[in-house]
Length: 500
Ligand code: FAD
Image (cartoon, rainbow, N blue to C red):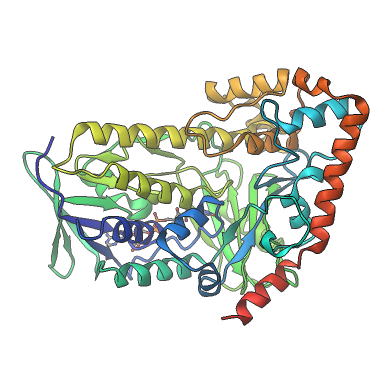
């Protein structure tokens, strides 16, 4: 396809995506490729994106970050899951808690035992068997290595952090590893007349930044992937009804809960993300069902504390680039697509995309096979997450507004329809190859939103009623006993900050 060796990599954009990519490249490709990052202080970043999912710990670990230092520097808190409020019906809550639930059996997931017990008349809540949920609801957290006498494997967790501070943290790391930063606004992109490959970025100052491979992290602008090499954008708006957000930080609340709150509203949903020094808030909504002014009023009326800035409207279009890699441009972050923030997946997608780029990195020139494989994996990953997010809108029993009635009637992808029907009829749900979300994640959202299966796996009948009851009771006692010994989330954070 192109035989030129890749000696110089240029990243356009210094938001979370740009600096994640720079850090990943600096760590993994040291000595083989020079990395330059171009960003414009004048344009700035999108400034949201503060809730994450557990794989971020692997990413931070791979870069060698010290957890305590990272938590201090980014004003982070612990996230044990997402509490979905009013999603199935107004007044009903459930949690997508990270980690496992109950006990791991080799052939039959725990929820089948819970379903059988329910069929026998038992009324235990599914989340009584989630260590993460119980810790979250009691506002507790610790690494379980500090707790004596527990047989439980530990809490699965992620972070909430200040997006701007995380980008700065990654920038310090990247620059210490040799990444060159160029400040300036790109006003022209120079492409080769014959191949269409990008050759250089011309800044307003007149400086030209040349490179062999370009990573477009320019946010929604998609300056290289969209405008220069013209990779088409596939719109998923027919399945994901929201197209705008309005965001504002507010003062800290008395208690810093270790989970994200996602509160369904008449025209979308609202997030609350607790950090050490403030709460991140926003409302994600459908412009067909709510004006910006109505959204602003609703957000300000329901803030947990005093607003710290003027609310900011952020329009978006859900979907993705058909080819996330086109010619010599790879797109990551918002430039490559956006699924909306309901399950906090965007930062993860940048991290997994940057890792994929390293794995597919061209050796002797860019080859079609590597580009095709990169695009195939990226598409599959996006589609699986897309289905999981659509599930929240489709599988619920709210009929109290035009927005929710629209969700009830909207078509869904065949892949999701199949999954929902299998679960409804049999209680079985399978994690597809490349699916970010585990079976337990799917089970929680399905059960939490009222999709209760008509049957359970026959293996669950292998226990007597008494054995089943003893199993469930002993699990509950084990989880409750462990949670009792945990310090509060605030105590965990305070001891950590004091140790710095
Ligand atoms: P940006 O932050 O927009 O950065 C773009 C960069 O490109 C900037 O540095 C800008 O200066 C530069 N740039 C653009 N044009 C030029 C130019 N002409 N010349 C020079 N530089 C230029 N993700 C999560 O994981 N969890 C969440 O909870 C979450 N919540 C979100 C809520 C909302 C409402 C939205 C919209 C997104 C959310 N995301 C979330 C996504 C997350 O914010 C992004 O994935 C992440 O911030 C990466 O953004 P980015 O770096 O791609 O873009």
